[in-house]
Amino acid sequence: MQDIPVYLNHLGIVCSLGRGAEQVWQTLQQPDAEPLTLADEWMSTPVYLGQVKAELPPLTQFAAARQSRNNQLLMSAWQQLQVAFAAMRQGIAAERIGIVLGSSTSGIAEAFSTVQGWVDHQQPATATRYAIQEMSAPALSLADWSGAKGPTYVVSTACSSGAKALASARRLIQQDVCDLVIAGGVDSLAAMTLNGFGALESLATAVCAPFSAHRDGINIGEGAALFIMSKEPAAVALAGVGESSDAHHISAPHPQGAGAIAAMSQALQQRQLNPEQVSYINLHGTATEQNDRMESQAVFRLFGDRVAASSTKALTGHTLGAAGAIEAAFCWLTMQQDGRLPPHRWDGVPDPALAPLRLVTAGLKLDHPPVFTLSNSFAFGGNNISLLFERIYGD
Image (tube, rainbow, N blue to C red; front, side, top):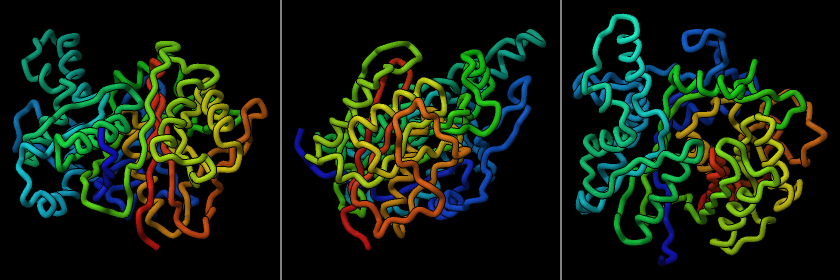
């Protein structure tokens, strides 16, 4: 594979922090922002969730199989890119434009309602129930909306899906399969997902506190982030990708972080960087007992306690298949701002059993925007990925 630079040209985003890059960045930096909400419509016990409060576009003009909340989130992000996409696609054949998304829910919330209809009223399921929850549905929908006719698919590797989609898009461009790729992640809240994490006893009783001595689990969120990616130079490039699969356990990470270290190291090696050259890491930081222990150890072994790092999941919830793309967006935004970093929200009580990290305090500002940032996503089954971003130009 040729070492061809691939750039993140434009961003569309919606999550619990708001809609659009500017609103999301401003809310991210507000010290009193409380974007997670206590909700009781999903489970028997109320839980804190990263719900999208922004009004979402209706999809009534499309077939019933396209009318999911997941696709509404996707459309909300896509609408922010339409003007830029129309300009960038000039002179590019539709067959050279790809779609790669990460997702884990698709339309499962809507499909679940038909299951409930059978349980309660013996109403038979229709073909729509099956089509709406197909994992490919978001990518096929976006291909229809954009007119893209190149490779179109969804990566579904749990919590690493959104980051994996960006890595896949980079390869499509570097291998000269595509000139332009719309890539990112989307996931929506669903009762089945929430109750599944509840069954694993992974849900927090309050707003999550990554790396805290008092951490007791995750908050789930929803959202979408889309990038237009190409060889056209832009302010930020996806300069390195590290992927590993340690397959330690179906739902628990490798206790020493072997796969995490391999992924971060590979991302640095692709750009021939030393760890000291990275200024910020967006941590996977789920606030579960095992992830935080593993990740703090892995980051400390590679970077020590020098690099500024934060988990943003107390602000968005864990957006599952969208998390890698949304957190990549936070890196992308950080590298084009004034040196402020995404803050680490928690109760401020470090767990002495964890390796020490330099967690970002509210208002921390570097002398200049970081040149290199890293974003970690670690999924079930030991599916790990680290994305390395490079600021090409800017103040």
